[in-house]
Length: 113
Length: 115
Image (cartoon, rainbow over all chains, first blue to last red; front, side):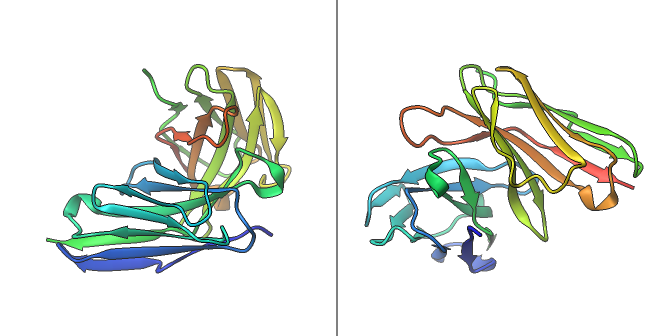
């Protein structure tokens, strides 16, 4: 079946350190979206990537879509305590469905002040 | 504008009871999704609707689960009979289904505990 794996499952960093999470799909994606879920909260949309090799930035966050459109990464520069939460990638385009997403396993980020 | 509204926020009930979860999508959104989140299985898509029509229910665990969307502003997810392994956080999300790929907007979820 369709699978989207993320590594690592958990990352603990000191405030100010960088953080990266990686996302891999078993099949080629039409698009990939990234979400953040704070502890006890709900997933909140961050960004969407559509083009092969696309790179987008949001302040300290850099998102990349692989050339083969099967993998993606999220990099946070100089983490802050407000970055704490679980980061999910979500792959779209499975079976031709334009709005169905398969969520990755998520990476839980802990930031120590 | 109001976001996706789910009720109840918390539900605790005994196994065997019927459970009904409710969702009101964002006005104007024509796609609605039901997800289940657990530590073991992560965030799983159960079913989704486009324009009130179920499109993909391949994620529904078994016949005990059913979902309806009688109109554009309301959907229910029902579990009958409930079992302890159904304990999870259930999220409803909505989006537009036109104009390419659209982000999904999640409700606050229903935390369900089956004793």
